[in-house]
Structure formats: structure tokens, C-alpha cells
Image (cartoon, rainbow, N blue to C red; front, side, top):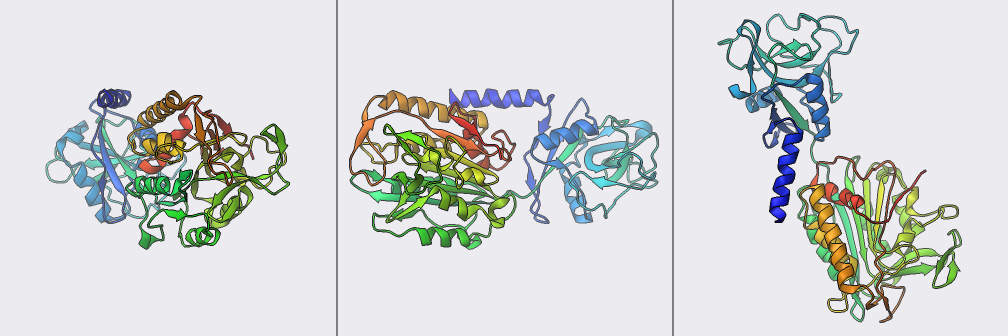
Length: 453
């Protein structure tokens, strides 16, 4: 049934693109980019092709060398991608070249939609000629070999073209790298966050854009016992990651959490009393506060990186907080962040009484990371897992993941918390499977809190 649903989703996606036929993207070693020919039998304008390329997460192909031109042409050299036009000329797929209004005609002002320098050209003989308001580039054959055959030369066309042109080529930048730090505590009396952390690490490291240890990424989950001092280990791991603009990073923690110290928090009711303490995660023998976690990422190095925080512990929603009037050091001060917490600032997180895994990680997060297919599939999987969690444990007395607790229990109440910064919207189209899966969590029927700077 699940495969049938996915097949229906795929068919609907094809229908939405006016019966377009998309080949699989092909990687080129010359620049690490991928190129995808798209066939539109009924024809397509340049503007429509440009819009759909952007919607797919790429852009119309930019050609910056003869080698790149030959490679891209090789993907669309079959006659199916071409149409016969005026005078038996052959019109090939749209590329990303365009001429802004007011440019000197016919050869002035040409640009690529990607912003790359327009230095290499491969115009056909006598082109560009602006024969009727032509401001967009396609492959073309007018004078080379047999006129009815494809060729790797270019023509300037109007938006519709005389073909009509029935294909275009999407170019995708190299996949962004994914870095991660997965941390869990080994408290065998209550919780095995270390096993959960390793399971999360295994899912993430199997994704195609996961950075390798030789690229500065972690090679395993960080397992902590009650006597570990993790603060320096975490800082060293973060410092070693050579992240750059556009990369993504995942921080996972599974284990004990609570409140301790601090006076900069808005009071919230916890256990029937107002509480102004910072939220903390108990990383072995160290307590890491929300303020401290925020400071580690509040710098130039991490500002352009997409940061995903998965925290499975009591009061973990407080790492952003319910009210910002006094919460001066929480994660909401960061750019490009998303927090996915197993509990609200006032709420509890739980351990599975049998496996001792953190419950939200076991039932919600890990199944979601196993379903990196489409947003629709992920939302369905996550909602299904949450439903199963409530069905299994609603009202049951379960072990708490609280601050230095040792076997205390409470009735199960499922109250997760999600906060996404305005500069990283949950519906942002991201082609990389890892980032896509993480953003998909924002589409759940959870408690979604938008933070405004």
C-alpha cells in the first residue's frame, strides 16, 4: 500500500509538470555539478522552463567552457529533444543564457541565470542576430552538417521560439555537505541515550551528502557515562568541522535534561512553581545550558550553515523557550536554525521501559530518518509514528529523562516542540535528501513556533 501511495504521488508530480519527461540527473566531473534534461513534447517557453528549473532546486544550464558545452550537448543530442523550425533549422533545448531589456543588440549584455561569468560562447554562424526580439539562448543548428540534425551551437530566440522548443536542461550545484554530532548518555538504570545516538548517527552517515571523517566530520556517536566530561570534547569536534556556506549540521542529544542556574529566563510553571532557570542537557558529568549551546554557534563560521537541533530530554523545548521577553541566550538568537524537541519547556520526555531508548527518538525520529523519499512520505511516516506512540503509551507511567533522575516516572503525555527560524522556512525546496528529511519535520501537526528577530 505504501509503495502504491508513493507511485500515485509520483504520477501526480508528473501530471503537474504538463507531461514533462525528466531523465535522471547526470554528474559531470568537470565541476561536480549535475545536469538533467527535461522533455516537454508540447513545447515550453524559456520563462516557463526557467521557473520550473528553479522550482526543481536548480537553474537552467550555464555553459562556461567548451568541455561543459560538449558534455551538456551529449545529454540532449538525441532527436527527441529537438524540433524542426523555419527553413529546416533545428532548435534544441533551452539553456540559461538571457539578455536583459535595454542591452546593446545583438551581442551585448548576455548573462547566465546562475550569475556565472558570460565569457565562453558557442554561437552558430551569424548569431546572435536579434531577429525579432530574441533574448534567450538554446542549442541550435543552422549551417552545420545536415540542418535537420542536432548540433552543439547556440542561437538567440524569443521567449516562444519558432520551433517550438520542447526541452530544457537543469543544472544543479554540488550537494551541500552534511555534518553531525550525535551525543547520548549511558545511564543503564534509566536510559540508553548512547544507543539512540549511535542509531541516529548510523542513519545520517548513510545519506549521500554526509561529510567523511577526512573532511572533518565525526566518525561515530559520542557515548557518555555519568562521569564523562563532554564539554571540551563537543567543542573540539565543532571546531574541527570545516563547514562553509550552504552546508547543513545536525546536533542530536538523547538523555537527561532539566533546569539549573541562570536568571535570564522568562518564568514558566514547572511542577506547579515558576522557574527562571536555564534549560540544560546532562552530558555525562557536565551540564550544558541553552545559553552555552547558543554561544558555540553564534559566530561567523556557523552563521551561513543550516543548523538542526534534535534534543530528546525533559524540558528540551526550553532551548528556545515559550516567551522571549527575558530568554536572552537561547537558540532563537541564531540564524538558520531549527529545533526539534521531544518536550515543551514545561514538559517531560520519557524512556522506553523495555529498551531504555529515549522514547521520542525510538518512535518518531529514527523512523523518520529511515524514510528519506519525499516530503509527503516523511510527513506521513512521522505522523504515523506519533500516532503509534500515543496509542501505545497514553496514560502509562514511564521513566523520565529528567535532571539526574533515577527511575522516577510520570504519566505519558506527548507534547513535542518545534521552532524554525524565519530565514529557514520549513517548506524551503532543498534537493539534498538529508536536509529535505529534516525540514519535512516542520510540516507535522506538532507545536510549531515561529521566531521573529
